[in-house]
Length: 204
Image 1: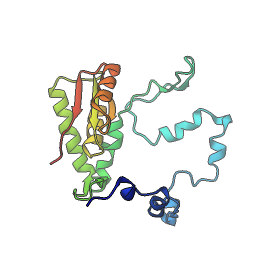
Image 2: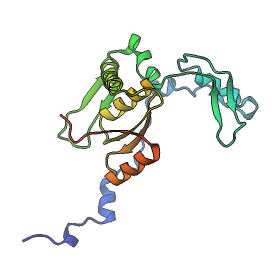
Image 3: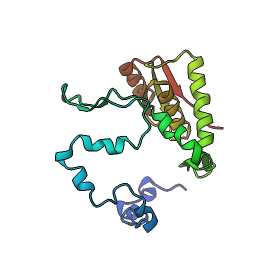
């Protein structure tokens, strides 16, 4: 004998008992102390009187290949341009610059929604190797700066690795969540005019 749909469906109240979204966890003092906004003068430094030059403070936390000429260009509003003339690489800032001091530190801690899958700890050194391997593969395919690709992947480590590899080469990438349909991916491929689709059907 099988249960009816009514017998197997859980009510909102039953679900709420197990959905502990109302809980609050105070961060440890050591974590709070190292935050960027502990400085009591930050409101003054980032006041309207100091806008937009105040954001140079945070831009200087990144590594730039070339410094910018203009902090904010509003001449083509609402298409505002920040740090005009500057050159930067997202992949370098996310991966490469951490290798000297933190190459053995975990860069990606991946826990799958499927509890049977292994938990992965990818260090900055491992991430550097995997990103470069994939970037080399993209180059071998003839892809270069300014080319467009569509990424249709689930929430797996290969997703940020692919994005970082594209960023390293200056490849424009449109990311479509793997849970979306093929039709949804196709529409985004058409919109972005990309010739390459990066996807997967299983993980080893």
